[in-house]
Image (cartoon, one colour):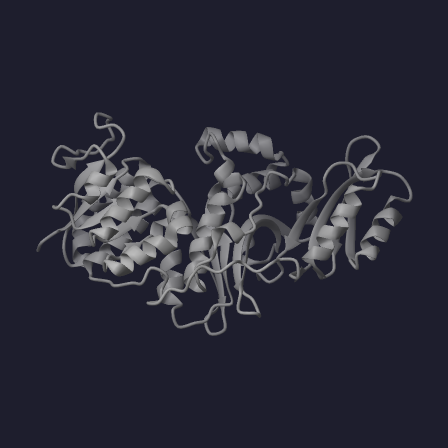
Length: 429
C-alpha cells in the first residue's frame, strides 16, 4: 500500500507527539486508515535539538513554506502556531498547490477562516482542524458530523484548561487569582505570558470555530471577550453558597432574528449542571439541539497526547478519502457580526465592595430600581475594616439595563472599587 506522506512543520510537544503516535500505533493506524501514514519531511527552529525521536531518515527543510512546496509529500501538517508569518504562509501555499492541510492552529482558522476556505474550495484541497478546539475532545467531529442533521440552538463550553485550572484552585483553596496563576505557570499549565489564556482570547478563537460550524462563520472582531482576571476568591465563595460554580465560558446561540449571539465571559453555572463538574485542566463542549437534546463531552483540552491524537484522527480521515467542507456546508456564507448583547435578558451576579454602615443597601437598591433592575437575593461577607462585600443576584434583566445600573452604582461614594458583573447561565443543566 502506498503510504500517505506527511510534511510536518513544528517539532514542539505536539509535533513530536504526532511522530510518536504514528510510529507506536502504526499497525492500528494503518488498519483503520487503509494505508500507512508516515512523516517524511519536517521543519522546526533548530535542526540540532534532541527531541527524543529519530529523524535521521526524515527530510529536513529550513523553512515551513518549503515543506508546503515539497513535491514528495501528500499532506501538510502545520503545528507552528500564530495567525500570521510562517504558519499562514505555509498553509496558504499548500492549499494553493492543492495539498490537504491539517492544523491545530485555532488563531489561524478563527481569524483567516474565510480566506482559507476560499483557497480550499478553489483548489479542492481539504482543510482539517480537529486539534484546534479542545485537544483530545472530538468537538469538531461532534458538531460537523455527529450533529450534522440537527439545527443546533447552542454550542460552546469550557474551552481553556488554564482558566479552568485557575478557577478550580481558587475555589478549592481560597487563594486569589495572582497566586494561583503563578502556581499554574510553575506547573506548566499557563504560559509565561498568560494573556491569551486568562483574558479569554484562546477561548474566543475556539468558540469562533465552533460557531462557524454550528451556524455560520462570525466576524471575530465583533465577538465580546472578557477573561477571568477580575474574579476573586470571594466571588467563588459567594457562588458556592448560591449553588453555582464560576466557569469561563464561550457560548454561541442562534438568536431569534436569525443572528448569532456569541460571547466569552466568566459565568455562574448551576452546581448540578454537567459542565460544573468539569474541573482542573479539563475542557468541556456542550451542545443543545431540538432533536439531539443536550450533549456535554469532556476531556483533556491540551497536551502532547490529546492534541496529537486529534491531529492523527484528521490524517486518518484524509487517508480514507474523506471530503469534508471546511465549515460543514458546501456553500459557506460570509462571516456575520455577532448580535448586540444589550437586549439579552439574563439573571446576573453583582459583587460590590461597599462601606459597612447603615443605609448602604437602601442607596444601592434605589439605583437598581431607577434602572428597572430587581434583586432576587443578597449575601454579605466581611471585607477590610469598615467594608463589606455584597453579592446581589438579580431577576432577569436586559444586559444594557445592568450596564447602566453598574455605571450609576460605581459613582456612589459608598461603593469602593469596580463592581464585578457575571452572567448567570441557568440554561446549562
